[in-house]
Amino acid sequence: MRLAYLAALLAPLCAAQTGTPVPALSALDNVMQQALSRYSVKGGSLAVVKDGRLIFARAYGWADAELRMPAQPDSLFRWASTSKTLTAAAVISLVDQGKLDLDTPIFTILNQYSPYNGKLGDAHLAAITVRQVLHHTGGWDRMISGDPVTGDRTITAASATRTAFPPSRDNVIRYMLAQPLEFAPGARFAYSNFGYMLLGRVIEKISGKSYEAYVRDSILTPSGLPRIQLGGSTLAARLPGEVKYYDYPGAPLVSSYVSAAREMEPAPYGFANFDLNDADGAWVGSVIDLAKFSALLDGARPRALVTAESFAAMIAQTPRTTWVDSVGWYGFGLFAVPQLGGITWSHGGTVPGTRAGFWHFANGICYAFLFNGDSKDQTSLTSYVAQSVWDALAAVTDLPDQDLFPQYYPPTTAPAGVVNAASFLAGPVAPASLITVFGADLEGPVTLSLGDRTMPIFYSSPGQINSVVPAEAQTGDADLIVRREGWPDAISPITIAPVSPALFALKYQPIVFGPAEEDAYLTLYATGVRGHRTPVTVNFGDLPVPADYAGPQLQFEGLDQINVKLPRTLAAKGDVFVTLTVDTQRTNSVLVSFP
Image (cartoon, rainbow, N blue to C red; front, side, top):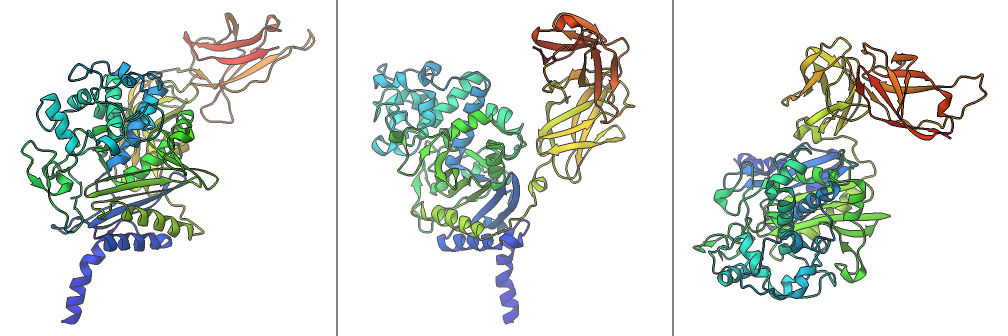
């Protein structure tokens, strides 16, 4: 009887750990179980990435305690303010596209808004830049005047604008335009949810899409992160696969800030209005999603979400007067601290019933955690887990070299993601030509095929596969298929044409002509040329020269070689752009110097 009782007692405890065990990192299991027990939290999850590889992903406790539903590594949790990093990445993507200058005054962009009472509350409002809002130096300080997107000040905003409660984002903005700032823009740091809500509107104004649609189409879908989505405020709005949230034991109910009736609700379902907080705290995703997002942010896992230059700007040091504290600063959607010979960048988040955070270190380690509860003081849980996870990892001398990401994400190919490997341009491909396939989660045991022909893979990474079209491929439309066992195929429609010429942009040595009796030749490398039906021409600027040879380079599959005798009229011409004409098609250009 005692044994049966003990087995019944231990069964739910054993079931409360899910995900692939990693014996070398078992200390992390102890950290997380201790966190749940010490702070009376129902469930949580932890993921660890090293150099872009997911080496640990586990979940603990309950996604839904009443239903005895264990948390899973891919269970969806609220991200709270870690959502700001996603918003910042979306803003920076607009910069990378040349559509946004960060030094533009934010209300020059958002010129559709005016103060609800017709009176601008502060002349400095017109000077606040997008850059300052990203840095939380716009001039709003919620510690002085309250947070206009959470709590009691939302009541004030609705009352002042004489609009329904809860107020809309537009009416909160109209209300805030009539209020004074707490400090001059750029003078100091003060964390502002309202500022990041404004950035969501900047994204909408510039992109012409809703905030959610732009982030989904430009950031999440291309990165293979389809399950990240905006969450709901109430229990009734709980998403499929999302955990249930719990307040600390003994917590009082709150009068809802989500409902016009202001019913008494548990704070996790009555305090945060995610319609207002969309761009500053409303995203929902798994801990694996959060870890993958952080690895994509700086390019540790290809392909990077923003350019290397833009990511450097996201963590660049700000003036000391705007530092968060004596230790570090806030960049664009990231806290940054000099540490371990580099920069540690991170973000945390909290709303009632949620603790979220991720840390990325200069040694290539990143870890992320999510909880469906929190400590009463809203700080102890994060402090304990962040430090304890770091200590546990520091004690391991040989981290696993595995990558668990392929367990959780299907391979996906980008729209128009099959391109010529020389030019990286989309369009028809040719038999026996080299191609590159761009997408997400393309690593692991994947195969690439065209019809019933399996294609060789010369190189693969999470964001790219290099291969060659079968020489016997028939012209016309076809489907290129990326396959990994256990997942749906990623299918890319392609068109096969007799030729699809492009030059590889190699660095060619300067060409100096010798004595008149010596001929000079140039060898160019290309792909998609060998099927030509008419003689190939090499164009030196506007000077066409017939190629002496244009066909396969015999050592490397899919590579074409073009040999051409150089006319002496090119001597001392300086830099010349060289192209090919192949069956009337003009290729991309490469630069050759004739000093």
